Amino acid sequence: MSIATQERPADQAGRTPTVVRLLVLATFVVILNETIMINAVPRLMESLHVNEQSAQWVSTAFMLTMAAVIPTTGWFLQRFTTRQAYATAMGVFMAGTVLCAIAPSFTVLLLGRIVQAMGTAVMMPLLMTTLMTVVPENDRGRVMGNMSLAISVAPALGPTVSGLILQVGSWRLLFVVVLPIAGVITFFGLRKLKNVSEPTISSIDWPSVVIAALGFGGLVYGLSLFGEGTGRFGTAIGFAVAGVLIVTGFVFRQLSLQRSGSPLMDLRTLKQRTFTVALIMLSIGFLSMIGSMIMLPLYLQNLRGLSPLETGLLVMPGGLAMGLLGPTVGKLFDRFGSRVLVIPGSVGIVLALTGFATLVSATMPYWQVLGLHTLLMLSLAAMFTPTFTLGLGALPPELYSYGSSILGTLNQVAAAFGTALVVTVMSAHTGSLIAEGVAAKEAALSGMQLAFVVATIIALFNVVLSTMLPKRSATHGAPVAAH
Image (cartoon, rainbow, N blue to C red):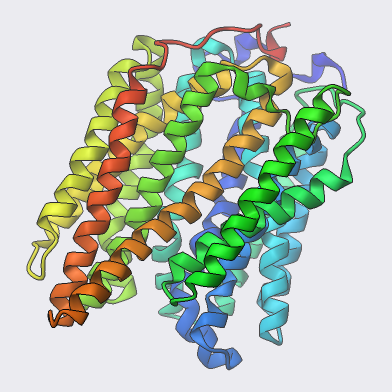
């Protein structure tokens, strides 16, 4: 693949490169599926004759597969061209979607979700790596802002889209609708997509693949057991501790392999202070977002009596606002730097979570829920785009794919940890109050308030970390497209 096939910087000025547009669209479709099954659990229980705990696995298995596969994407994106990676990811995703749509049993449906997740796991690192390669440093904020459409709006819209589709058909329709859309995007993507970097021939350390899958998968599974609130704390602690120990072994193996030049996940990225600070901030931000996505439906449906569709419609404006503000945030970052966005964004997250912690009640007006949720999403938008850009921009080009892989992996762990944290705090406090004779509804409200308090305390760390980020990225070299 010659550099002549790539877009010239003059063609890119003031607009998002075609390759990035195509990848954003494809990423939006595949990430939408991560949360699209949340509202379908009752239908699955009835149609496939499984209990609620089993039905929840259609979401849990997706998350576990993402956590297990993403660590390998750094090597995968180094080894294959952009078109090969795109064709593989979308082909695998569509194969999984077909399996889900025609699944005659719950086992086949679960297998389809695993296959879907394997394709999805490649798309986000592919998008981030490609963006950092083809977009000049002084235009990355604007383009990264466009990427937020896939990162933030897709998961937020998943429950709403599924609620609308389930009003008119069975759970199978969720996949029947997605399949032709993914097919069209894949077809036009392969017609227009160009390779943006030279593949590097390298071997893969298969023991590292197995260790990563066991370690990150076990850790996320243990945390997800906490998040289910089923009381299986012994099992959850066992899996989480085992996951941490195996991940520790994985880290030591990668440090050893770095001396021979063939690690599965290159940890030299963590030597870049800006990348490490950005990684922590993004993990805390993702924890805040996922925690609110878990708590608000529990509050609105279990305590306020709203339907899943009504709940989805109430929180949808916040997700849309987050995505639509992304490009504007990116332009402001390119012009003024990070601090005018990241510091106010971090403060806004704390204010929104504090509002929920103090205002959640049996009679809280819905406009307050809408307002606080929108403030949270807008604040996350102000923080995410500059932090993503600064973090990856601090790395030399040869480490972009590994940095994207680490970001994706830690986001999955943060999502699982956020879910486990809020549900465990809420359940423990609620159970304690009920044992003291407090009415169930009042106890549940108090448990939710405490969960938001804990999330607020964690979010305060981002206010401090936001002052440690530089105003702009340190340039390690021009993008490939500029050569």
